[in-house]
Length: 202
Image 1 (tube, helix red, strand yellow):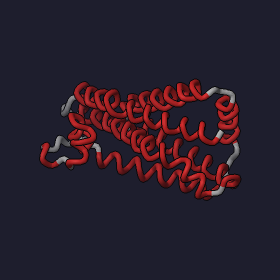
Image 2 (cartoon, helix red, strand yellow):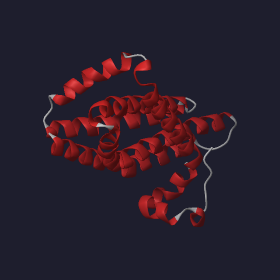
Image 3 (spheres, helix red, strand yellow):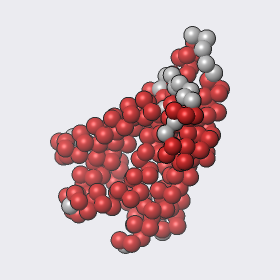
Image 4 (cartoon, helix red, strand yellow):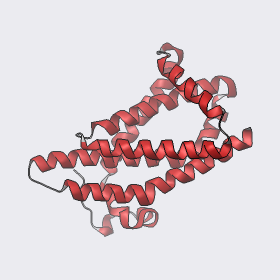
């Protein structure tokens, strides 16, 4: 599914940010856009539906929030890093199942974030809620979307293999290299920013 662009076709900003992974990231752009659209619409739909949707997920989330509230900042940081990196990695690898699991991961995350924005904005107001989410979300969300796009690419590469084309092993190698050297560090940085913001408001 992912084409292999010439290095000259890859935008300079990607070559600067992703270096050896730049061409691979550029090849993922159609899948990234799909993930971005799904994330955007699931977030917006969840926010605007508000209390009209089932409370099952918020109740599930409430238990998690209560657990998080009891953590010290260092343990909260470790929890956020572990949760984001492990979830992103697992759902990326599960993309080998024809690319479907990463799409579910993105929609579910968009739905949950929309609910969090809705619930928090009732108390803190929407501008403050967005202001609190933006500093780490601007790193975390694109990183998660990129891991999902890489997972979808694994699924499409498996389909290509059925037709005797491409190499699933090579695609997995590219995805793992991107995740280890770029996505995981970005999620780490996002967790640092998130914990610093939480610490500033405690």
